[in-house]
Image 1: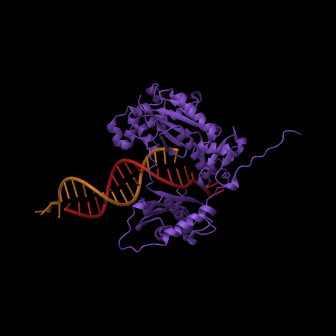
Image 2: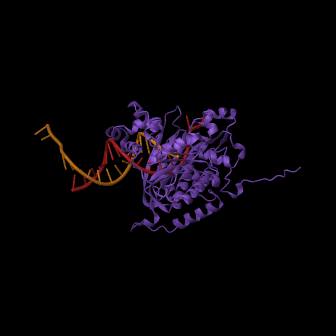
Image 3: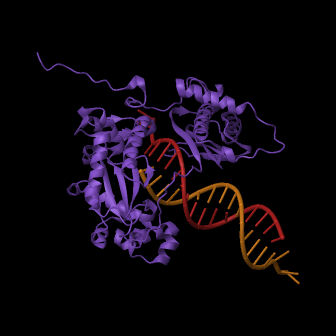
Amino acid sequence: MPKLFALVDCNNFYASCERLFDPKLAGRPVVVLSNNDGCIIARSNEAKALGIGMGTPYFKCRDFLKSRGVKVFSSNYALYGDLSHRVMTVLKQLEPHVEIYSIDEAFLHLGEIHDKDLTQYCRQVRQTILQHTGIPVSIGIGCTKTLAKVAGRIAKKNKNHGGVFDISNKDIDAILAQFDVSDVWGIGRRQTERLHRRGIKTALALKNCEDGWLRKNLTVTGLRTAMELRGTPCIAMENHPVSKKSIASSKSFGCQVESLADLKEALSTYMAQAAVKLREQGALANSLQVYLTTNRFSAKPHYSARRVITLPEPTNSTTVFIKHGLAALKQIYKPGLRYQKTGVVLFGLMAESYHQPGLFSPPDRKSKPLMAAMDLINNKWGRYTIQHAVAGLEKPWKNRREKKSPAYTTNWKELPVVKASSLAG
DNA sequence: TCTGGGGTCCTAGGACCC
DNA sequence: TCTGGGGTCCTAGGACCC
């Protein structure tokens, strides 16, 4: 029996998380907004049924949502991250080969041990996750990851399957003939346009498309996708968590920002956040990129600029990032524009233990204990307890998060309170 | 007035080397 | 008048994912 892949996918994950702590929301439409309350990034089934599209800007549908009694939440990543961890933990207890693919998805490699009915087995997995975490999931099974994704989508959409669909023992071509090519994993908007121009509308047509054309027009990734639809695995399981190759931090502003002083505060804040992530994974970066952009939707001419800085030596010191990053920011800053966003990406990551200091560079004995002390204090007392002065105190440019739910599971002060009341009387 | 953030991979083209 | 070829490395930009 060949090995099979299963995709476990949390249903409407962010919306499900929000509903978990507010039973009144059961059966009611719920949506979750992106950072800055910008657009809709998660919808409960009831919200989908109202025709609310993924990615719709909030300001365009605010009135509609209100009129239909849709409950709206700002995103609460502390909550989603914690619940994701719980789901993955349950999964790892049940299965030896789990690859966490995203906050709400994981691939399983189902080995030969499962000579039993796989669909039945996955329904049990699903039930266990629901019971232990309260999060509903769908599971798709196929002989490649791409086919498992197809199956997962069918499991989620068609209620008759009880949340689990195994495509491997079905008439695959008949299913792919009904499957829109734009819904295939790895086929985005651009590739869909290209495929449509060639008359390819379904996953089956993509599967049967000629290799040479695919390689030329959709690059090697498109060819891989077609091969996966044919049942040839090209995308392997990642059995060990891979270390990151870059770390980014950026956010849109909550109000209009024009001055260099505000941009400096914001960029310093983001550089500090990126540096914390870098230190958490015990790594150093040898270069950073800073960028600056005006609103691309605005009628005014769009300005966007970036600059890459190679550091004299790999580091994870917030102080060093700020020093070089702000100098670069000054170079790309143009006065008189309304900026929408600035950000930083750290590149050239390496493990701290691998780093060999330069023979002639002066030893930096202060930076490491200083950063360690800052991290310790901020971990204990909250993120901005101690910071570089240039990152600012008021942070007037900070983004909006007007409808955030409490950090129910990660903050003692925000634990949900259960009230018991007597039925008698 | 208000349109997310954080990642990965692939390719083309330029710079540079011998 | 006539100005090579092949390789590597780096970077910017595009496309995709959730």
